[in-house]
Length: 150
Image (cartoon, rainbow, N blue to C red; front, top):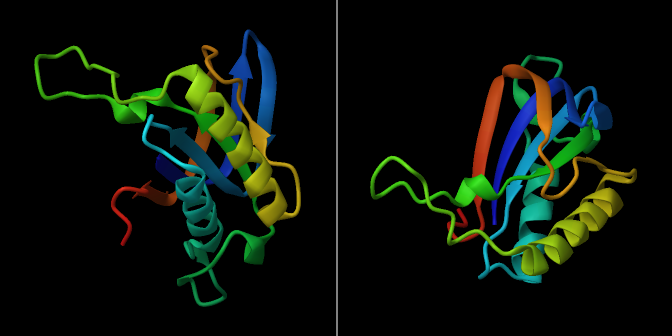
């Protein structure tokens, strides 16, 4: 799994003119899932997202986690995070999980993050043409890959 975390002061997802999810302070998380991903990857990534200390403390240092600032999460499925760009200029997406693999893991990630957060995670719609609006705070953008655990 790959996740792009963006610290935001606001973010929203719109599908066909309807807002499917919107947050203020928190994380916009773009989530890519590949066929090799497991529930163990999901568990590790969810804990990593929740523990990421990138929110400012009273001294302006990035020392606080999402729960410390009572932040929210907008979780968006994004298969393009597994784009292969080695050949030519048209990316390939063969590493991205097919919907029958990705949807159950995406739904489990929604549930897991909601439990850890103590409130429902906001989402887009899997596979839809989504319009994402955000105000990146910092900017702070972090890339996490479960195959490259550091």
